[in-house]
Image (cartoon, rainbow, N blue to C red; front, side):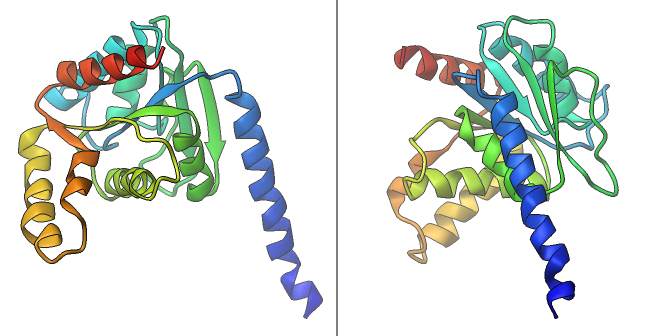
Length: 212
């Protein structure tokens, strides 16, 4: 019985090593904006180009930008940030498909465990930006909303880019989730939907400057 449980004990050490490595590698960050988005958008898509611009706008202000480190919109945002004063950071995850580190990262970390990676997404965050994405993006969005709602982290802007993409989710939260009493009306103020990355960057930069 003891031998059968040994792999679980070693897993705890692997988790600990990922936490220690992540904390040490990012210890110098005073604040960063975490950007989520799909790995499936191609370089010639409007969404990719907008993500490049978002990285440029944020890192151009000297703000560090954190993404999931993979292809698609993660790559695009790192690509925009990479030549700018702000640091371009990728928190990569080991997956059987869709995930390969993009080449536009000043700091590149690799994780085996989603929950350790999500901890690192939040630890230094002074803002979140959600670009169009799938289950992973939604998971990260609601993780951030839950942490802010329950005051486990200090409140920061959570901006969703694209009324056409995010409008249906917002309507569902209002017409179904709020209507059934599963959230309070004030919970809807925890995020904001905007149409362009320029608007998203402006909100984030204004928030960061107000704290200086």
